[in-house]
Amino acid sequence: MRPADRADYRAKNLAAGNPGSAFSIQPGDRILDSVYPSSKYSALARRHGESHRQEKTGSEDVDPRGHVKKTTNEIQALITLLGDDDTKVRDIAREHLLQIGQDAATYLRQAANADVDGKTRIEARHVLAKIRQEDVINSFYQLGLLDDEQIDLEHAVFLLARVGYPDLEVAPFQKELDELARSVRPRLADARHTQPGRALVEAINHTLFVEEGFHGNVDEYYDPDNSYLNRVIERRTGIPVSLSVVYLLIARRLQAPIYGVNLPVHFICQYRAADETFFIDPFHQGRVITRAECLKLLHGSGIKFEENMLQPVPARKIIARMVRNLVLIHAQQEESAQAALLDRILKMLRVQE
Image (cartoon, rainbow, N blue to C red):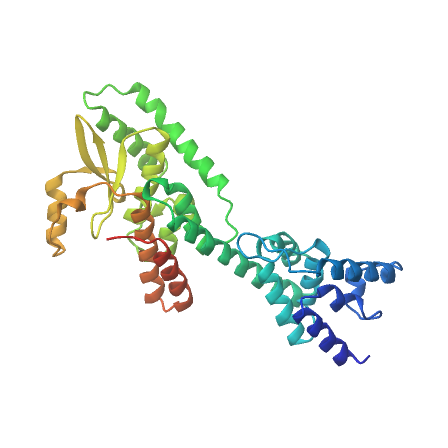
């Protein structure tokens, strides 16, 4: 069979959902040696084709998210076809891997970093990025279905960080937040203060802004990294809402009554206890601000004050504000695809204004 005919045959078998036949039917095809090495090729190929035909009796297995389930051999076969010379074969292999979803991610990651031909490596990276993106979108969809009290702020902000950093490992950043909170505790133990809320805020402020160097990013305010929490923690800088999130996550670890306040133009925090209430501005080194100063800020921006502007807000509204900021930033930078993706996520959050 001529090479062109073999490529067309593989494409037809892939389109029919039969990646095993795309490999095993044609002994001597250059791809087969990489999938079924050694002299045992013929038996393995036949066995794979037979097992696949048995699997195909009836409908394909599909997981709860609609992803098609495939065997390891089938996934690896499809990944090898990503490097095929025939565009039709590559396109169909890519589509099948996307349908498989997360089950293919481990093997795609191996191919993306392996010493294989450049075409396969590049295609594997592209497919892996798309699968990860769809996984994040699905996670946001599920998150949006939750009630406000069910949404975990920490989970949501690191999920958002995966939009910008698909390979993100969250655990090291959570561990760093644990360490930051642990650094605050000795200062609390030493504090002698008639106002425990002020003592708490002074301790957090000293750790975050004096010892660790967190600060507002005045010079590059519209950098997207200001909204991805992994980068905020790494670079020790961010915008009002992202620095407030760091503050809130430290406070949560200390079991402190500090909440987010979705003040227009400038997100802040609030210490809210029965005998002590005040506002905190993490963007300006955790400065304590009064209600009058908040009203002045609104007046200076031409915004009419409403009482709910100074009330604590749920995690849904905090993450929505971060997403909305990113939509505007990417739109301004003419990055339409990323802006559209984030706008899609924003709609999934189902925020009621």
